[in-house]
Image (cartoon, rainbow, N blue to C red; front, side):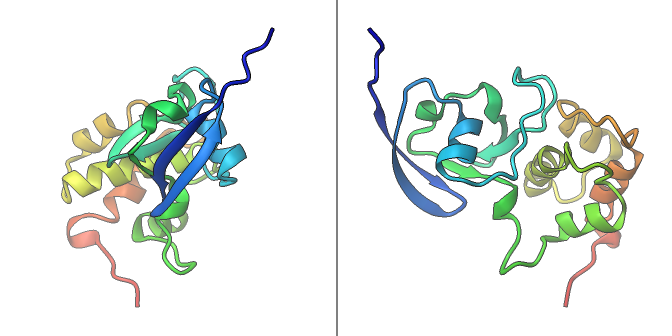
Length: 163
């Protein structure tokens, strides 16, 4: 006999308090994509190896493909969708676009969220610190040069303010 038990999950997703009835075994990425219906977070490897599914949980980069949704009760979840304001890209998203850090775009949400976490803690990271923050995120297209340039364009004297 199948166990059809469900749990009430209370958390905040992109600034919105939510209460959802979910199966106890639903992965966080599936909860975000199927229940919350936000699809910016990508599933690449389904095993925690590529970083495409990186989101922020209480400000920390976390792989959503290996995290159970129910284990995030009471926490603050941020996805790539949370960074834009009133339909305008964040400066980090804009730099990924302008500096060609996106390429095919599949790894981009995870790369941006890992970079966002770093920049919140350190607004002027070194190349080594950026590389370390992104080491769990794999890109098949760029060789990482354009990704690093995109993050570096946001920091220090390179930072641009949108009008």
